[in-house]
Length: 124
Image 1 (cartoon, one colour):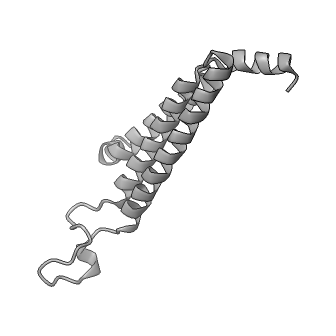
Image 2: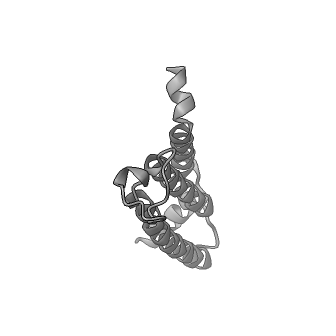
């Protein structure tokens, strides 16, 4: 059991980071801290995909010196998924931050409970 953890330390770190981000997302009241937790979760997923896509001793999937054997290269799909995920993550983070700014301008607080109380008072 201990040997597997040492071999798969990248996956273990990714799971720990995901747990930290998820706990942050659940237990924080501040919207900025929730966004940070969401970004930590994203990063953990990208780390996990990168760890799964890497195979020791293989080269990046760029044909060099005429070597066309599939066994010589790593799988390019996880790398493509990570790049696509990063682009989507940046867009979602920008949207969340812009909505947070709008909420702050309207309610003058970033506390989600306080915003919820004010919304109930307004009758929305």
